[in-house]
View 1 (cartoon, rainbow over the protein chains, first blue to last red):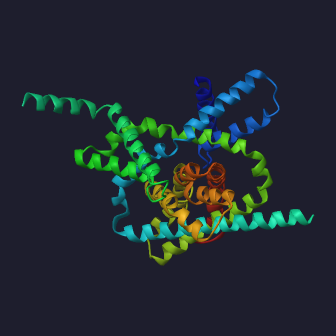
View 2 (cartoon, rainbow over the protein chains, first blue to last red; view 1 turned 180 degrees about the vertical axis):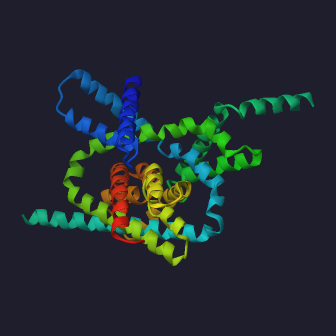
Length: 127
Length: 242
């Protein structure tokens, strides 16, 4: 457990350092995610027992952390509710834009992706 | 009278310490999660929204400032970073499926992200919102730290963007399922991807609680759309005079 937490923190730390050094808008944790993913891919065929065990450990810790992903949004979410007055008189308009644009984007993206997948499957079968 | 005084002293002591706010946050989340499971994962019974409202109500009733609460609850907030890094593992586990669908992932990523940016812009214009608010809204579909960075870059107000982004996550998680059911989308990879792309981490958490494949594709979209949007918006601002 402790080893895997150390590695996850370390990847975030490297990600944050890269973000600060190159001054990019992609946040450190996302860079850490990409680096950890590539490390796992690179070590895919590793036969070392140590690496295998470490990977398994990281894997179970990650499953545990990500299963509580919702909880982690609560502190910042409370801030949103407490600071709603920032929206001033524009509550309804802003909420309306958020509502319709979000729902349409979810619908558009899902239908588009499903249609492309069906199309690609048909083409693959023809070949 | 003495007893009451003692209780008050304990409260004064506790509300200045993180322990109380950490316990409250986890407790409120457990209540939200219990109700969510009890409702058979009804999207409208969103556990994040319930716990937020519970904690906010208690803060308002006790007159404790958000800053004091956050000072305690920041340990939970801190875990958002490591949790984002940890999303690499579910993505890794599905790497074969992701490779197989890489064509549709790429097209949906670019067109979906552009769709989110442009519909936000046009709806906001339609509502006659101030340009500063419109700029603050444009990056709202990606995870808060990226959205705030982009907002700052294009002349928005980052703190306003944070609020709008969190609201977007809650709206997506609460109503996205209905939209996809109405449109009869059955492909779990497409459903999950749309959730992550349009409503970042909160949408991803919702997708993960429903279906493993959907959750993984949501996590993938969360990361990819963050990167795509932070490239697309500055690029669009160079090409188009918004």
